[in-house]
Image (cartoon, rainbow, N blue to C red; front, side, top):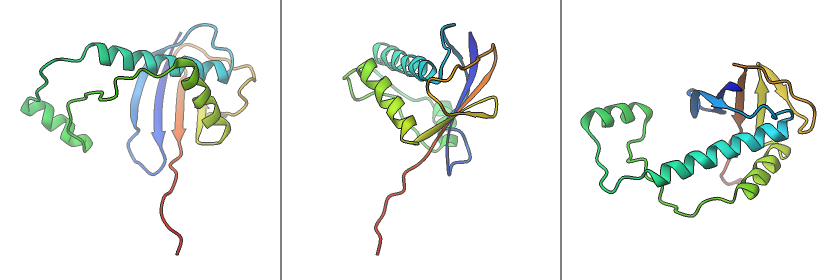
Length: 139
């Protein structure tokens, strides 16, 4: 089943990840299973990115202009070669949701309970809103 996924961070105008299509298994029936599927997709994407790394990277002027509009110009290199443990990554994502570090919305309706049945349909819109922790000193 294909759904549209957007990741947003409060305090930023543009989404961290633009609206992208994601293919989820048909067995995604709860928020917990949805989180597990999304983490699995991200870990697989990281593995693919690491395995397709080029030996000699370079940027063309067009690439620099495109990246300049986002505010960061880089080679897209993954410097940490250690692959994350999938089960640990899933547990971390579930704990982060339980701690309120991000919210999940399905077609503009917040999904809160991890084990409540979730009815996903083809082309549904999922939005993950990530909350930013404030850092600084108190005087």
